[in-house]
Image (cartoon, rainbow, N blue to C red; front, side, top):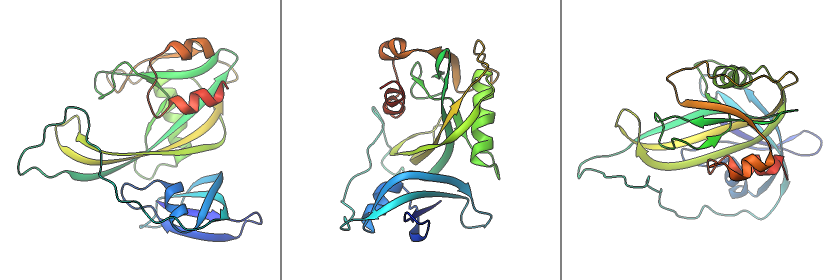
Length: 226
């Protein structure tokens, strides 16, 4: 993934590859640029770079990278000679609104956060465009046809934990988040039966405030109903 910063006129000020475990906005601050509006999420047709995220930036004092340890998943037990495998997963999600509320999906037992409600979405297939991926995932998890309104955010997490296969991973989650609207909302249906989604629903602000929300999605959902 490539992180790019442009000025008000659209000229490129900075660009750099996103290193394993990094967050795009933090990476820009290290170079002396403050990220503002997320302008675009696009694909680059090169072997080295698949996704390019572009922010509007302004000049600020550079902030060197602070040393930090990678958090471990709660209850993780690591063997004496066991080393984690680096794994980066790029996924696309949507904050979908309609006359019936906001669309959310519930994690299944196949995940480490079973029962939590979050945004519909999932991993990109090989050579798949991010906007195509999010439309596909929303339909698979909720049965809704939506229209994208633009990029909202890029949310990252970095931790050491176990994959469903049991493999120990140094995991870097990169979540590309879009805004979307559903003009003809229907009762949600999970088409990807047996996957990572147990249920899906439309919720209003009151229902969301009472739901068990995923940690990374909660700020985006709260912002929508602020």
